[in-house]
View 1 (cartoon, rainbow, N blue to C red):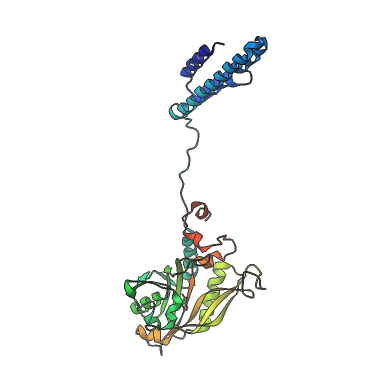
View 2: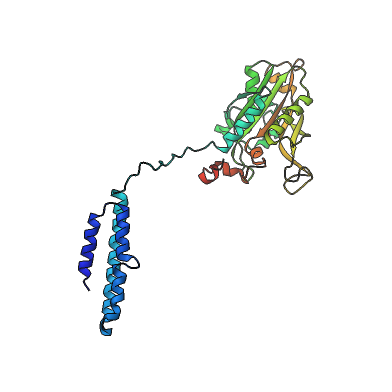
Length: 331
Ligand code: PHE
């Protein structure tokens, strides 16, 4: 069998080939069903039985060689001789998308600005006064323990564990009437599917004359229906915070059981955040006369309420901050 001459011929043909189509034709000529190699294989019948094994070996050798040569040309071809077809649309650059937390923040801001709340962004690293002392939590008060705080430089600075420090900053710098929405990062020493050590909160504060719990309830209802849908109900439950009196926890009806009671909720209700009427001591701490003015405040997380929306599938809060594109690209 003329192995050498077959390989030589193949190399010559390949030298003349200048595009992938020609390469494909050559491949078929050699390796195809009625190609040169299969034709040779047919000849085995004409060969004397004692020479057949040698013939078979040669045939395999040539097949391997031809395949190797063609493979190496494929690579060269795509590297060097790619034909450019100008009519094919170019690959679109990847444009990315907004992070789910940003989506949530924009929605919150949109809804609350419709009823006059002005977006602010107060400190994430703060002194002791704004997130604690001015909020009616004196040094060593046990309520401070509820906030799982990260302290820096022996307590000189804190990574703010809630957005309520924004109430103090706002009232120190502005006279009533005040309608503030503070959205920032917050930090707590907790990690679980429901807790991320860094998360976001938003805080509403309204201070004016004759503000009542009815105003608070109306504002909460407006937000909840805007964010979750008009079928969701809100309730406030007595609770305790040092900086509000009276204080409440805010619940919304569960979307899974529609308020009937199921595994994911407590008797039809899901807890969403805290609220209350601004404590007179807090007003005093920022120089506002509590005999003339009063107000309400509420503070909710950003990621957790977003996870509670019916059409959002984020089962673990830590997924927000994994930077895994296959998760984040869904938003
Ligand atoms: N700051 C409270 C928290 O993080 C929530 C809250 C805000 C409660 C405003 C009352 C008023 O839990």
